[in-house]
Length: 204
Image 1 (cartoon, rainbow, N blue to C red):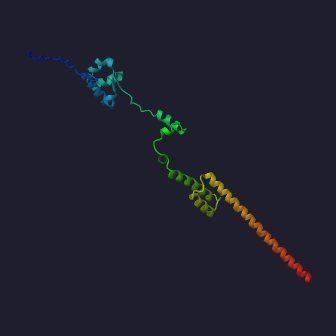
Image 2: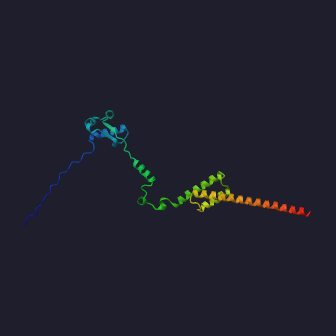
Image 3: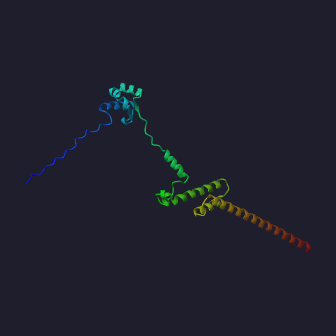
């Protein structure tokens, strides 16, 4: 019997650990610069072309000198721009990007019918208050239209204003007719009195 052949696989040599972002000597400079510039170490930029000169600086005095020379810089804060958001909102105000595919909630959830009702009632009641203060309507008319507005008679302000003008015109017309009727009655009374007087005069 032949002995089993053992094949030894050649393992790859251990790769060296990749170097960190900065040499060990440069970490001190970055920390000192961060303390001087009052910011985090992530915002400090060290000139890669002058790494030898920077690595020699081991005191705050030397770091300040390098900052003055522009070899060490504090990077600007990264902006989170809202320009695209503003542009999108402006388009939405014009009615863009609001089709069926952009809607997540139901019609009632997006703008409840109760909110629409409240807004309408407030508009109508504000108008009635203004008209009452300006003496355009009296308290009886105010109450009449207030109750009708609550009963869903007027769908908007224009309809309510038209109804007020119509009712006021009807009242003026009715008042004029009543005055004419009273005038006719008075005239008839005078004529009757004249006839009676004439009859009495003839009998004498």
